Length: 532
Image 1 (cartoon, helix red, strand yellow):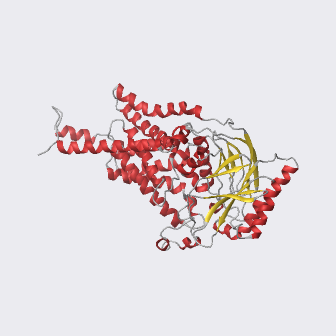
Image 2 (tube, rainbow, N blue to C red):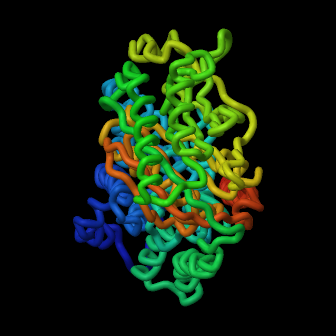
Image 3 (spheres, rainbow, N blue to C red):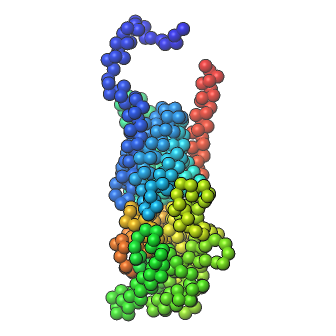
């Protein structure tokens, strides 16, 4: 027996005629191939919103397009469409991971991360039938980013919505609730934009239309309200900081074969800085920061490396943070920042805590070797440090956040909570040539500056090095693959933003919202089955 009911007076033939006369566009729009193409295209659109392009406003549009693909879909369709979105987004965003090692690591990483985005979109699809679904969908998106930041192998947060918003209107929200709240606002605005257009097209009741519009207006209003949290005014005076970019002999993985030349480049550029100070061409800095891997030769075991560094530090006459690789007789290597005093020599160290999987350590080495012999370039794994590193550099408390760590909320936050008045992000991007990687990472650093209201110093071996004010503005930067030194007066700040004080609580709250939406969906399904 058919369960189809018809309006009074309408025959099956009339309904068939109406269906045949339906718009071909509507039938095409409902088809899977178009949805798949739109999902992939929304990923490409999201990629275009990321640096080095200042097109941050494309991100809400990309999420609106993705929301249209996911709305009302079943879980399996949501997963598949999300996977396609992830491919469209991450294939171009992470192409720099193929520099020097070919496409296998790039494709493997993108596939894994796209699967996690597919799982995220499965959740968005499940909650998309709920009233006010943009709220639940945006929370589910934030939950997916939280998962990607933690798993597998310690997580890979690259590509968070927040990291594409360094030039954006929503950026002040980072100071209120960190990157989770910033990502949530972008997703809510995007999903809300789609819902508002969908409701408007269907001529809704006033209440429904107002709620849909609120999902767009709320994050915009919150961004306005958070603007007073953004300030670059000095609280503890100022300091003159210098970052040194010594450059490398050549890009790619083989730059490590000329480790002594890299060290000499940074020492020589520091000697030139000392000469510029003596000649009055630049003000004398209070402290200097070198990049990560600026001395891959262990100065504790190699007297010639010690002498080169010590001579440069004595010449400039102020404390210098040196990026080095320490090789103990047993155990893992250490990616270490060394505080070098012009009188006392090396006095303090910080070991990088977030070790990059498949870059600084190789999980499942024997299995991965089946796919790429490049894993053997990492002959000895690095081990993680345990404590935040805050150096006292001529009275300024400078927190060390080494390269890859800038992508992790807890690594940066714990450094500021430990008393850092300035954040330094010493990095080594020479491995990735002239790719967009360095600009993507620089955008992260700008978001961190606003999130914690701290100046961020970015010394990089080969560029782009920069000085970023607490309001996220870059005041000085270098060219790529150019030896240079940046000297700037920077504000010292000690006030903690709400994001710093609250820590992970905003993210946990959004995870609860996502869980509430999924729980509500489950209850509705159980009731529907019982009713049927």
